[in-house]
Amino acid sequence: MKALLDACVLYPTVMREVLIACAARGLFTPLWSARILEEWARAARKLGPGGEAQARGEIALLARDWPAAAVPPSPGTEQRLWLPDPADVHVLAAAIAGSADVLVTSNAQDFPRQTLADEGLQRMDPDQFLRALHTAHPEAVAEAVEAVRRTAERLSGQPWETRALLKKARLPRLGKMLG
Image 1 (cartoon, rainbow, N blue to C red):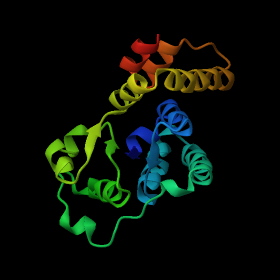
Image 2: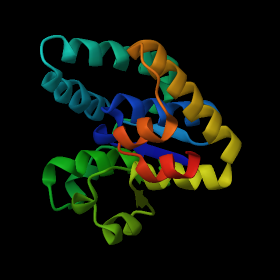
Image 3: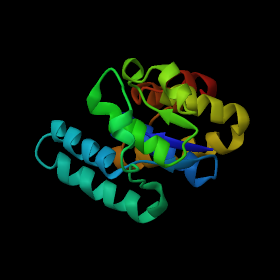
């Protein structure tokens, strides 16, 4: 299964790390575009000085580890598409160019299900997507989450309970499943 990851699911660190850890275990093939990665870098400015630079470093590592994930939109695709927010058309165009099966986004209102279905795509929020992966591959998802939890503990210097970490990462239902 191929999943296009929108900027809003790449920017929160723990959410991204769980998604990528699941992809690394072969549960799905991640996709994104250069423009999606650029949106992530610009959004990281909210972290203050150094936020964007840190994001660009993380993006470079992601690009190194997943070189085939970056898909350029096909010429002319964006012009034929319509979404409630025209600024999101590039995301749909990238999903189409990458032959994605699902668009993982927290931005449901700007990606109507019927519009996506017309393009052969399903929309899922990250919590829903990860719960579906867990249902199909419970051990692999649990291992991925545990690896992320251990990294969060190491980096923060404080203990993290799985459910609390996932709740903070806006993955509360997955946390409930695993907690």
